[in-house]
Amino acid sequence: MNDDRTAERKNIRAAMDRLLAGTPLRSDGALTVVSLAVEADIKRHALTHRHTDLKDEFYARIRAQDQVPDSERKLRQELKETRERLAEVRAENKQIKAEAKVLARIINVLELENDQLKGRQGRTGTVTSLSGPR
Image (cartoon, rainbow, N blue to C red):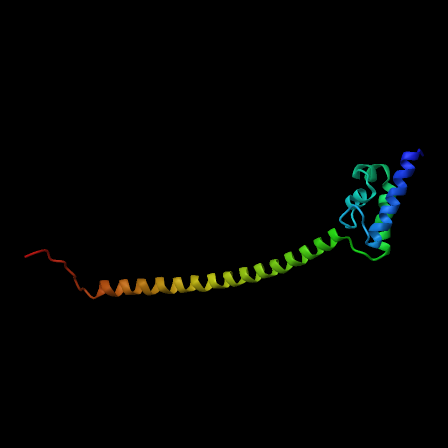
């Protein structure tokens, strides 16, 4: 291994230590490959393609410390909020369907009453005329 790669690996391991200790120097401190690359002052591509063993080691160390990366924590919170909203929408949808059934029954009753009233009006024999001017 040449000196450049040895120096890169040394920088990556030092960056891992800082991120896991919560003392970042260059990055936002998130426990992600992107932050690790920024912290180590290397391109992400170098970390994900050239030093895959160190990337895997980083994630293993995160899991070993029972730390949840910020990105995962945010996703879990977003999932929780989405599930809560979904439950609200489902309850609202259920209520709207029940109200629609009630309104349909009301419309049916009104149509029957309307038909009955029209039938009565025709049977009374009453003629209504509108007379023009005399």
